Length: 119
Image 1 (cartoon, rainbow, N blue to C red):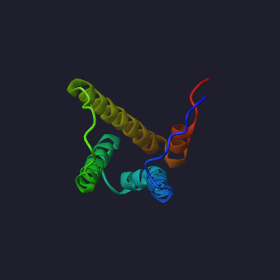
Image 2 (cartoon, helix red, strand yellow):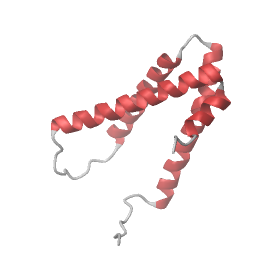
Image 3 (cartoon, rainbow, N blue to C red):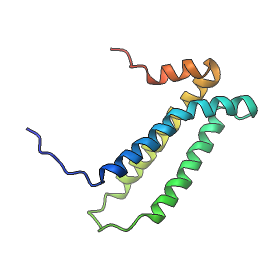
C-alpha cells in the first residue's frame, strides 16, 4: 500500500510548468526544421546552442529562486556524476533527434522520437 505524498507545488503552477514543457517539446522539431532550411547549422551545433541556452535560462531561474533550508549534502563525486550523466544523456538525445529531423524530415523524425521501443 502506498502512502500519498503531498505535492510541494500548487496545482496552477504545476499546470503552467506542464504547458511550458509541452510547448517546448512540441516546437523543438519544427524550429529545428526551419533552422536547417535557413542556416548552415547541423544537428550537433543546434543541439549545442539549445543546451547552452537552456543552461543560461536555468542559471537565471536558479538565481531568482528563493533559498531553501539546507538539506543533507550529496557527496561531491555522486553529484558530479549525476549532473554529467544527465547532461550527456540530454545532449545525445537532442543530437540524435535533430539528426533524424534533418535526414528524414519533421514528420518521420517526430514519429520515431515518440514511438515505443521494441517489446
